[in-house]
Every structure is written in structure tokens, then in C-alpha cells.
Length: 141
Image (cartoon, rainbow, N blue to C red):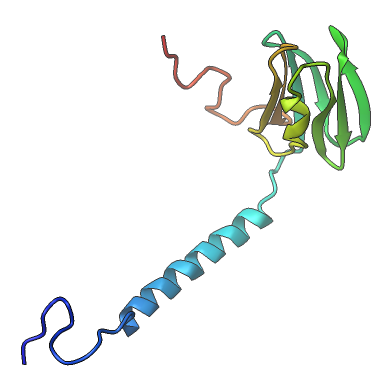
């Protein structure tokens, strides 16, 4: 009895074989383990936020203390620190994408208000790791 690819050799083909299910189960377990590890990961250093104006650091704000403040160079842009996260809460820009971005709290996250030339950049507090620098990874141009 010779089976063909269309299963015409004697009945319907199985959708999954035992080995397929074992591989799928293994991949799902590995994914769940990675998600749990990421959820439990907390940076060794607390996060702070650099408030940038015209691509220069205007303020460095701790995310430990809840507060509302404005940018000294542009008081129409209002920020809020709440529960270890920071967000634009008011801006006079036309589309308000910066306000819609919401709160950010993890090192590496950024939010920007391009019309007002303001940005938020969350970084890890304290001295940089050995070998880490503030130089760009890639320069295009």
C-alpha cells in the first residue's frame, strides 16, 4: 500500500503527530519560562529620566518621587512622574501624540514631542556599566 501526499492511500491524514505535539509543547514551555524571567527581572539600579530639550539634557528626574513639573525652556509642556513612571500629560502641539504615548518606566524607553522639541529618555541610574558609552551605535549619512 503506497500512500501519496494527498493522503489518498487509505484514509485521512493526522493533523498532528505525537512528536509534533512534543515540539510545540517544548516551545511553549520555553516561551513561558522566558516571559516569567522577563517579568521578574528588575534592574539593579533604579531608573531615572533625562528630559531633553533641543537634543540636550535639560533635566534629570528621579522616578522614585511622584511629581508634576514643566520644562523650564518651554512651560507649555507638562510632565508627570507617578508610580515609578513618567509621561507627557499636557502639550500645546497639534496632534498630542506625546500625551497619547502614556507612561514609560523601563530603561531604553523614549517619548517625544517633536513640535516642542522635547523628549523623555528613561535610563538606569548610577554610573554606566563597564564598556557602555553614550556614543551612537550607528551613524547614517
